[in-house]
Length: 340
Image (cartoon, rainbow, N blue to C red; front, side, top):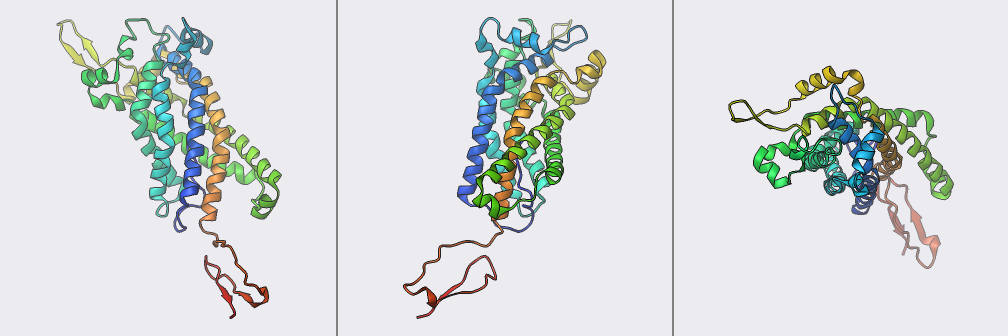
């Protein structure tokens, strides 16, 4: 989840290249760092969801032990596609968001940008799930998940890289909407009104606001993760589905996993509890991500606010400053007249 800038709807100029690059750099570094640290939790989440069935409902510790056997390197399986997804996601979101800004409301533009981000990064997310879901599956049952990218495209078709796109869209777009809405409500209730002058001359005030924003962001991200967890389970089940089957006549046929059919099948086999399998690891990752999203959200608001403020330019005084007349600022520019 990236952070759209509140108040960045119609009107206002675009952020400068330095502001955009700073936001992009901070988002990318945070996303990549969180990806590396949170990959073991993602492995446990996907492994427990993949092995979920009527007779087997593995827990978090069981999935971690299976992933770490025979080597701890197994805890970071699927790291390569996960890093590609994390590095590409912020840039995709920010470009899509900036393309819309000025014609749509901030939250609406953010949700559309989130959908674009999901569509672009879906192949990497699919490969990540396939690599991480094999920890608890028997050799034969999980063999199709260990295929290379080219082999998957040749055997199942290129479209299979976007398998599970619907539940991912429902999960991520809904989670982003819940996060932004709840953050704005809690922020208005908890955070004090922003005083730009005080923050400029009192660094502690800015630090305290950033810490409060991080806490609120973490709470909101956890709530969004819990509310959208069933879509995450269905997404994993759809992506690990083996498309090729051999019937009794010896002919191979394709059976594509559908969203509603997978949801009904999972619910019938495991009940309501099964739809929240892997919620614990995802909540931990979401809480850590929320610590970054809160301050990034505040930074985005600063950029949006700066874009409509009068421009401040250096004032070069002549040898005799009494000859300088400063006119009231009627627009963004400060008009200076120097008497000769």
